[in-house]
Image: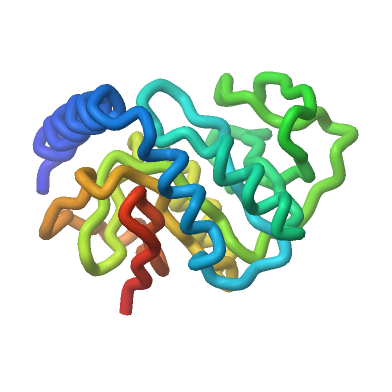
Length: 183
Protein backbone atom coordinates (compact mmCIF):
# COMPACT_ATOMS: atom_id res chain seq x y z
CA UNK A 1 0.00 0.00 0.00
CA UNK A 2 1.39 3.40 -0.94
CA UNK A 3 1.57 6.40 1.39
CA UNK A 4 -1.23 8.02 -0.66
CA UNK A 5 -3.43 4.92 -0.26
CA UNK A 6 -2.83 4.84 3.49
CA UNK A 7 -3.59 8.56 3.71
CA UNK A 8 -6.87 7.98 1.86
CA UNK A 9 -7.73 5.03 4.12
CA UNK A 10 -7.07 7.17 7.20
CA UNK A 11 -9.32 9.94 5.84
CA UNK A 12 -12.10 7.45 5.08
CA UNK A 13 -11.82 5.83 8.51
CA UNK A 14 -11.83 9.21 10.28
CA UNK A 15 -15.12 9.92 8.52
CA UNK A 16 -16.45 6.46 9.45
CA UNK A 17 -15.49 6.91 13.10
CA UNK A 18 -17.08 10.36 13.20
CA UNK A 19 -20.28 8.93 11.70
CA UNK A 20 -20.31 6.07 14.22
CA UNK A 21 -19.81 8.52 17.10
CA UNK A 22 -22.80 10.51 15.91
CA UNK A 23 -25.01 7.45 15.52
CA UNK A 24 -24.43 5.83 18.90
CA UNK A 25 -23.99 8.07 21.93
CA UNK A 26 -24.22 5.05 24.27
CA UNK A 27 -21.39 3.01 22.71
CA UNK A 28 -18.71 4.05 25.23
CA UNK A 29 -20.96 3.18 28.16
CA UNK A 30 -21.80 -0.25 26.70
CA UNK A 31 -18.08 -0.88 26.10
CA UNK A 32 -17.33 0.08 29.72
CA UNK A 33 -19.88 -2.50 30.87
CA UNK A 34 -17.53 -5.10 29.32
CA UNK A 35 -14.53 -4.02 31.46
CA UNK A 36 -14.41 -7.32 33.35
CA UNK A 37 -13.83 -9.16 30.05
CA UNK A 38 -10.47 -7.43 29.52
CA UNK A 39 -7.34 -9.49 30.20
CA UNK A 40 -5.77 -9.24 33.63
CA UNK A 41 -3.47 -6.34 34.25
CA UNK A 42 -2.80 -4.47 37.47
CA UNK A 43 -1.67 -1.26 35.73
CA UNK A 44 -3.80 -0.23 32.76
CA UNK A 45 -2.93 2.59 30.37
CA UNK A 46 -5.98 4.46 29.15
CA UNK A 47 -6.05 7.62 27.02
CA UNK A 48 -7.88 10.93 26.79
CA UNK A 49 -10.21 10.79 23.79
CA UNK A 50 -9.70 13.40 21.10
CA UNK A 51 -12.29 14.22 18.48
CA UNK A 52 -14.41 11.20 17.58
CA UNK A 53 -12.26 8.61 19.40
CA UNK A 54 -14.38 6.33 21.58
CA UNK A 55 -14.52 8.07 24.95
CA UNK A 56 -12.71 6.11 27.63
CA UNK A 57 -14.09 7.98 30.68
CA UNK A 58 -16.72 5.39 31.68
CA UNK A 59 -14.24 2.55 31.12
CA UNK A 60 -11.63 4.36 33.22
CA UNK A 61 -14.10 4.63 36.09
CA UNK A 62 -15.06 0.95 35.78
CA UNK A 63 -11.42 -0.15 35.77
CA UNK A 64 -10.61 2.08 38.74
CA UNK A 65 -13.60 0.71 40.71
CA UNK A 66 -12.37 -2.82 39.93
CA UNK A 67 -9.07 -2.00 41.66
CA UNK A 68 -6.91 -1.50 38.62
CA UNK A 69 -4.33 1.26 38.72
CA UNK A 70 -4.61 3.66 35.79
CA UNK A 71 -2.06 5.65 33.87
CA UNK A 72 -1.98 7.87 30.80
CA UNK A 73 0.57 8.03 27.98
CA UNK A 74 2.85 11.04 27.83
CA UNK A 75 4.84 12.19 24.80
CA UNK A 76 8.14 13.68 26.00
CA UNK A 77 9.95 13.44 22.66
CA UNK A 78 8.10 13.20 19.34
CA UNK A 79 10.22 10.37 17.89
CA UNK A 80 10.56 8.32 21.08
CA UNK A 81 8.28 5.81 22.80
CA UNK A 82 5.75 7.33 25.16
CA UNK A 83 6.13 7.05 28.92
CA UNK A 84 3.20 6.45 31.27
CA UNK A 85 2.29 8.41 34.39
CA UNK A 86 -0.12 7.42 37.15
CA UNK A 87 -3.55 8.98 36.83
CA UNK A 88 -6.98 8.72 38.43
CA UNK A 89 -10.21 10.02 36.89
CA UNK A 90 -10.71 13.69 37.72
CA UNK A 91 -7.05 14.54 38.31
CA UNK A 92 -5.80 17.65 36.50
CA UNK A 93 -3.88 17.32 33.24
CA UNK A 94 -1.55 19.42 31.11
CA UNK A 95 -0.66 19.18 27.43
CA UNK A 96 2.33 17.00 26.53
CA UNK A 97 4.74 17.53 23.60
CA UNK A 98 2.12 16.23 21.15
CA UNK A 99 -0.56 18.56 22.53
CA UNK A 100 -2.48 15.76 24.24
CA UNK A 101 -3.75 16.00 27.85
CA UNK A 102 -1.36 14.15 30.17
CA UNK A 103 -0.61 13.92 33.91
CA UNK A 104 1.77 16.44 35.45
CA UNK A 105 5.45 15.47 35.81
CA UNK A 106 4.96 14.96 39.55
CA UNK A 107 2.78 11.92 38.83
CA UNK A 108 4.81 8.74 39.15
CA UNK A 109 6.05 6.96 36.04
CA UNK A 110 4.71 3.41 35.78
CA UNK A 111 5.06 0.42 33.47
CA UNK A 112 1.58 -0.69 32.32
CA UNK A 113 0.66 -4.36 31.97
CA UNK A 114 -2.14 -3.52 29.54
CA UNK A 115 -2.27 -0.60 27.09
CA UNK A 116 -5.63 0.52 25.70
CA UNK A 117 -5.16 2.33 22.43
CA UNK A 118 -7.43 4.45 20.26
CA UNK A 119 -7.44 3.68 16.56
CA UNK A 120 -8.97 4.51 13.21
CA UNK A 121 -9.44 0.90 12.07
CA UNK A 122 -8.66 -2.67 13.09
CA UNK A 123 -8.89 -6.06 11.42
CA UNK A 124 -9.63 -9.59 12.59
CA UNK A 125 -5.92 -10.44 12.90
CA UNK A 126 -4.96 -7.64 15.29
CA UNK A 127 -3.88 -5.12 12.68
CA UNK A 128 -4.35 -1.51 13.77
CA UNK A 129 -4.50 1.70 11.76
CA UNK A 130 -3.58 4.68 13.91
CA UNK A 131 -3.39 8.39 13.19
CA UNK A 132 -0.01 8.00 11.48
CA UNK A 133 2.31 9.56 14.06
CA UNK A 134 3.79 6.21 15.14
CA UNK A 135 3.52 6.99 18.86
CA UNK A 136 1.78 3.76 19.80
CA UNK A 137 3.82 1.56 17.43
CA UNK A 138 7.09 2.90 18.93
CA UNK A 139 5.71 2.41 22.41
CA UNK A 140 4.46 -1.11 21.69
CA UNK A 141 7.86 -2.06 20.22
CA UNK A 142 9.59 -0.75 23.35
CA UNK A 143 7.17 -2.63 25.65
CA UNK A 144 6.73 -6.04 24.00
CA UNK A 145 5.39 -7.68 27.18
CA UNK A 146 2.48 -5.26 27.61
CA UNK A 147 -0.90 -6.44 26.36
CA UNK A 148 -2.10 -4.22 23.50
CA UNK A 149 -5.85 -3.75 23.35
CA UNK A 150 -7.69 -1.53 20.89
CA UNK A 151 -10.69 0.48 22.09
CA UNK A 152 -13.03 1.30 19.24
CA UNK A 153 -16.48 1.14 17.73
CA UNK A 154 -17.30 -2.30 16.28
CA UNK A 155 -17.96 -0.54 12.95
CA UNK A 156 -14.27 0.41 12.69
CA UNK A 157 -13.35 -3.15 11.70
CA UNK A 158 -12.07 -3.59 8.15
CA UNK A 159 -10.60 -6.69 6.53
CA UNK A 160 -7.89 -6.97 5.57
CA UNK A 161 -5.94 -4.03 6.95
CA UNK A 162 -2.54 -3.41 5.36
CA UNK A 163 0.24 -3.99 7.88
CA UNK A 164 3.78 -2.69 7.43
CA UNK A 165 6.92 -4.11 9.10
CA UNK A 166 6.91 -1.41 11.83
CA UNK A 167 3.25 -2.02 12.72
CA UNK A 168 2.72 -3.93 15.98
CA UNK A 169 -0.39 -6.10 16.18
CA UNK A 170 -2.99 -5.88 18.93
CA UNK A 171 -3.76 -8.74 21.31
CA UNK A 172 -7.46 -7.88 21.28
CA UNK A 173 -10.09 -5.18 20.87
CA UNK A 174 -12.87 -3.93 23.14
CA UNK A 175 -15.92 -2.44 21.45
CA UNK A 176 -19.49 -1.69 22.44
CA UNK A 177 -20.31 -5.30 21.45
CA UNK A 178 -17.73 -6.87 23.78
CA UNK A 179 -14.10 -7.97 24.04
CA UNK A 180 -12.51 -10.04 21.30
CA UNK A 181 -9.01 -11.55 21.61
CA UNK A 182 -6.88 -12.11 18.51
CA UNK A 183 -4.95 -15.34 17.89
